[in-house]
Length: 307
Image (cartoon, rainbow, N blue to C red; front, side, top):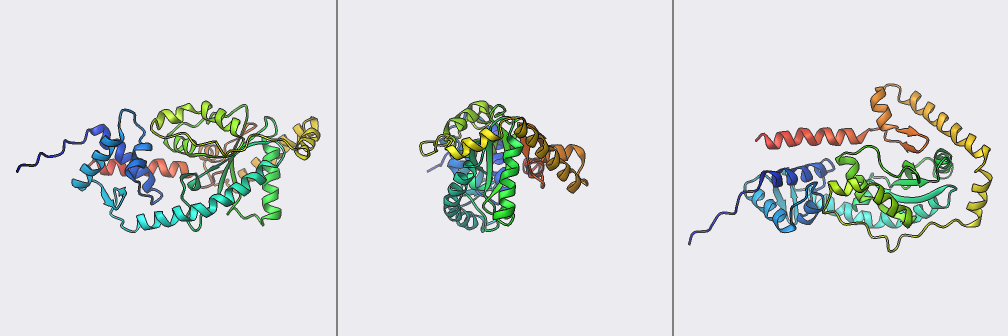
């Protein structure tokens, strides 16, 4: 009996699959067929067509399959490492929830979300819990400084469970840098506090879901709503006048001056992206990982498509 060959994979589907797999391979993280579909930065595909494409690419040795996981590199240890990181993430998520409640208690904090690897349900043994924080307008740098001081004084400057590296205020929820890296981070943010603001954040960043049309919205059923207990309201009342305004500007000037001195070797353009510092946004990414990921992605895609 003659077996009809599987139909060829459409070039657009091929690139969508390769781009998705290669992006996560920067983190040694193979994906399931469902995840490839969810993280595909293209519309018009179904789960069935994406799964078919993966199996056809495995047949042609364009992709390797290990159990339920797919990857473009022959690294049989990656699935085991991924599963270990997934299991570790369960433990770290419970810690992240406690830390989010602590962060939410600080003055001018309006919403807290988990970002980074933990937002993808993965945690390496040497990983940190990264937080994305939304503050009241005009007090972002004051809130940030209070949180950093708490980390230095009471957590001995440990980043392990308390890495607050990205802040925006409630009037500037839209992420200005729009690319595959930022879109991935936006759609995978895990809301921990401030349900209403998280929903506003999603609406303000609808462009990210345009990039990932198949990615499901995060569940907010258990996300606490914004709550201002009286001690927090009292502190905010004391710091909402001229004193608070002066302190916020001072915190921004001092922090930026410290970063400029510490990272003076960094080119100006790179510094401005890695340490984005405006009255309404603060980003602290000294490794400028975004550029590394996007550059390596393009290089690897050219290599695969040039075969």
